[in-house]
Length: 388
Ligand SMILES: Cc1cc2nc3c(=O)[nH]c(=O)nc-3n(C[C@H](O)[C@H](O)[C@H](O)COP(=O)(O)OP(=O)(O)OC[C@H]3O[C@@H](n4cnc5c(N)ncnc54)[C@H](O)[C@@H]3O)c2cc1C
Image (cartoon, rainbow, N blue to C red; front, side, top):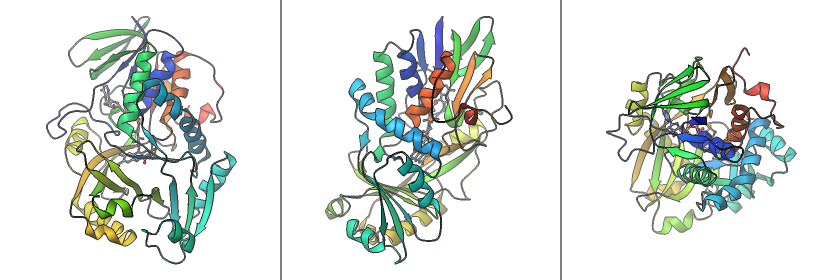
């Protein structure tokens, strides 16, 4: 019998498994690898099938800021322990072209945690980042140290490898059922086999409700997202060589600097949440969405946004898009809470920014399911399901 089964080998689940394996034996981390071919796959997918996720301390919400800081402080430890690098310190620039107070709030939460922040006016932004074309009354918030991007694929691989080295078992099957039984839980996998565990932590992201893995309906809201990628080569590589990750306060647009992808090419990426994004409810909805390349309206709009912001991207001849999904909770924070006495807990709800803080959400979830007491700047009540 396993002591604790962590279901979902994504950003939060793999982090929780590493922390748990440092506390006790009997840990199993269950979840499939990324499918080789997204277009024909008929199992589950994940929100981390990519090479770039922004990471930084500054965030308008102090709970997200502090969990990012605590996670970022452990990136080097995870890289060393696993031997798998995943963090690039490119820096971050938040910019505002209107009156939003996003940057003020992000600055205030970041400064309280000692983030390396500088406010910039438009000439200063242009001096540091000459490839940007911004209106004259723009303002910026630059974060230099401990900010940039992570490869979410590599981070999951690193957390998984570190958990394995600490003694966790890795089970690459999909979970099809989770039931409470006398003295523990039964975890059924897609080959019809059953594992018995004393406890289970469900960290299956966007697929949690659709797979029916929580005995309590979490009422997560899952939305499809489109991202657009521009291939950067030749002279453009030098032009964008010092590009930080970028976030636009008013539109919510986020941009990743040129990053190498598994096909050997380097791509600059943009994503923006939009009203066209589909609400994904059933497993069939999710599977169908992940097999697509996103939405045409988004591709057109994102490209036009990019060309306004970085005019030399007009030289790019090679563009493509991908689909992904975000999982929203009613609280804006992940739910990290028991859903069946002390035997089943969940750690879900990245709210579109769960990658950067994933190690710390996993740390909290590990303490919860292990039955350990913990001290953490985020009040645990804020991570409970609404109404508890
Ligand atoms: C386009 C896009 C851009 C983003 N950009 C950023 C960013 O810049 N910065 C940032 O911090 N965050 C970003 N995010 C959010 C971040 O990627 C997610 O919040 C994060 O991946 C959530 O982690 P998770 O562990 O909850 O889910 P996932 O990483 O999706 O992991 C869930 C895991 O559960 C597994 N699973 C599902 N069902 C089952 C099952 N039945 N049995 C077994 N395993 C199962 C899946 O295979 C997967 O591995 C972005 C998300 C998207 C979609």
